[in-house]
Length: 277
Length: 301
Image 1 (cartoon, chains in turn red, brown):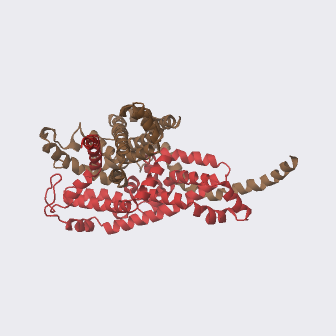
Image 2 (cartoon, each protein chain N blue to C red):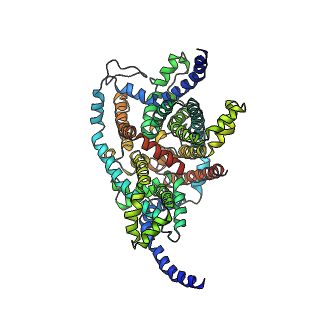
Image 3 (cartoon, rainbow over the protein chains, first blue to last red):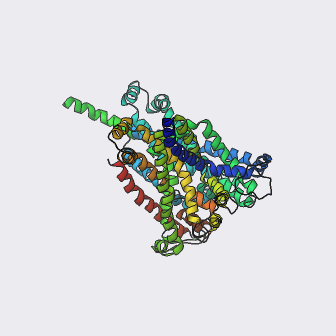
């Protein structure tokens, strides 16, 4: 009996602390959820157990916030940014790490500069640049800058991978007479799949959640990312607490769902991404 | 030796041409980076020396925009606030992360570790703008924070948190704590997992208490991970935008103004492009000046 008690006295405070930390993480989301289920037009107060949950609020918010359109436009942005950024960053990383192009290190240092600089310094010039190019308020006008701005991290990430590929593999492929492009496509890329997959997850998340560039470069909330569209939605419904919370939850839902399904993968990618970045 | 030399010289000629041809691989990335990042950076520096409203002809003003960053109270305050936010975005998450990671190590329960991991990681993957909405509701007069205070009998402390000149900045800061704690905890948990468990056993045999073990084993073992947390979260604090923009817009007054939101407002609501650019350049230099020494400190052994 006594050892059990002693153990309990040791673990109870720890468990309590852990529970508190976990609760802190989900509490704001629960508070949103509780408000989102109250009757529309009512003024919810704090967290309360919804005695009469109005699930229909989510359907209404879906329609009011135009979620179908938003998912589509976010998907277009992600599909426009992620595959191209993955391809050209791994080509560049391959050239720097394996082909050892002249001045490759200078290029790499230049990219490292972009790794720490905040988006705030590029956003205003990009606005006028896109205006000149006639791409303001178009999705292409958001896709192109996002590809460019993803280069520092993406090349950095893929370079780490290509540096770890044993030299014998690239040498043997050049002895076989395969040109650098063939070697890249048929030998190097398949080997890079794990690194590319993590990179894809990270870039998906950063594109989907991109806010600053989305609200500056695109006026129409329906052409923005999900995160960017929130701004328009809040502006229009800031007084309707119920609908606002339901809409915001719907806007968060896709990333949360994707996260819960691919959880292990996400965490691994984000932790590795953090360490390398 | 000479034979090899001749061979390699021929070989070098072919190989150097081949190496230059490799630039074809690097070119698309270079072009995209140059056009959409380097060129805008140069343009921002250029704008910062002019007075420009975005429409009419710009006037060169020398360093006046930079002087104003440090003399106009609102601009200077935004920079000060971004440093205050480091307490909330960096210091608290690292501290909480260390506590949680140490506990999970001691409990050695896979279940607790896994559950903590999933729940604490959630804030990391939702858009910052959406978290701001969640917290705006929490902080509202009818929100959960005041509800909790009332339940604890602390009615006198209730207020509209984000509308309060004194409390709005810490309140915004806590949103940052909420966002960053999960990532830091997970990084530190992964780091602790790599520390040799026998070190702890040996230490406790030597009579080292929990605090000593933490000082002598955990902290040094996590040096790299702490460095990563500190770097990422300091950048997030100094260059914060999403959370502040969606929760307070810098208000009330300019009590939560930060450089990111200020850059946006100067450019797009006040049409002071030059001033906005000067602030953005100063912000970037501050980020570099803070991050580079930190990187060096945590890298060296």
